[in-house]
Image (cartoon, rainbow over all chains, first blue to last red; front, side, top):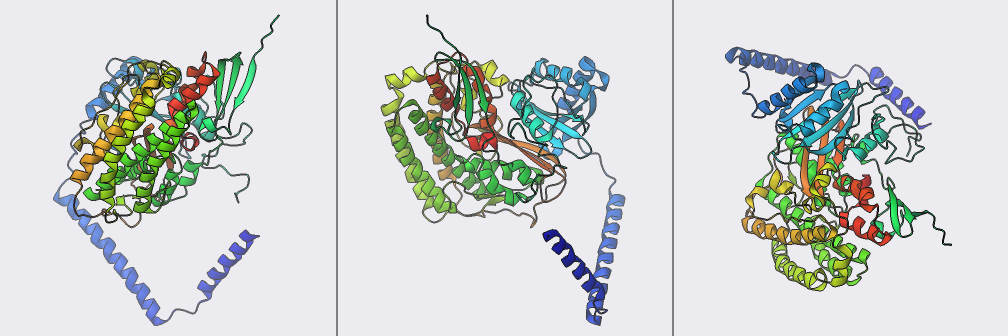
Length: 222
Length: 366
């Protein structure tokens, strides 16, 4: 009912806009002036950009101080796990240059084992596990830190949106247990190898996974 | 012939010792627990889902309601995450105000824990003393921002209100008062034979287990792991102050008790220095764009709340609302070790161990 009214209202205003008499000269002049100003601004910006590009060729940014840490992680993963284990890797500048590695889903279990136990890395403390629904795919992000060297890393594992599944990290870090249960509950990602994958926040008979972007609540009014 | 059989006992969700609506189902063999299954979600409000439709300033009040015993640190972790993403400068005066309220909050939070923990164990009067002294801090916050529990005090780029005239003096007066009272608390409780018998050697675990379970705060430091984010990964102005990180040895409830008591003293020590260095004038809000739109990308920041590492993971697509917001809640993560600790313990120790972990259910469920 309310939706109908909304649509009606919208249609009305649209009509009004169209039916409105050709605006008086003043309004037209204003519109024209605004359009001109926009064009002028765009031109100025283009010119400035072009000048900037001419004046100084984009110089390569100095590599981040965390780059060697990232390189070490990549090299180890490639050597000890598999060449294709690392899908992508970058230094997250927004986050204080956090080394970020995207690990291939099929190699994730071996990679997790390596990240925790290898002498050079020793990411013994898993501080956070988040699941993210990117609409094109799902992602599980593991934020880990080594308590001895204070080095940090973020590891991401991508999976398809339908039948999404990521190997459980619970056998490696016990703390992943409830975190993964929460992700399963709210995002519907399966974690094979998890000892006790049940819903944790929502009731056991709940339908759907609320944090998914396409989730439709049963009663949208609530 | 005596016949024994397993008894399934349900504790909570409405039970005063579960500190909120938390439920645990225990299997008992006589009085000994053979299996414990925590059940949570009774206070799940979907904060993370709600946040996806709100802009960042609108999310701040929702963080108040996660760990309602320590709302100031929750405020801070969110605004800190957004500031990190946008590279915003916070004026010195605002940062000092934030630090002062966060340390006051730590004292208030530990006082609630101290009072309720002793109440759990069976001592009534410490609860009244703790709430009497916490009330002073609550009144200070009330004067500062008009709320007693859900402060909504911090903003991206600064704080909402400057300290009213005379407020700093009241904080200054509170410090020696609280130091005196702490001595009183220690005289009253910390050496009490009955109390010690109830908590010494109970709920013990070692450093490796604590790290594996991702415990943080006093739950981690009671095993001797020196990991306080204020020292290990300094944020705000913490590297300007002198304070110690109290550590335990045995990893039992007694060590956790001692650490929290000592942390109150250390917080008072930080407060003293902060009041001395507090800048005379200055802004309380930095230069912030009218619409707060963090650049596309993601960030994970973490700070030391009274309960441990509270983290905030923001995924932004360059809009005014977060694409995904995830809170790493220390109560939730710390609680994971509970079923492991309870096996083989008696029913009375369930309350002692659960209280020793120090959870706030609003934060467990989020």
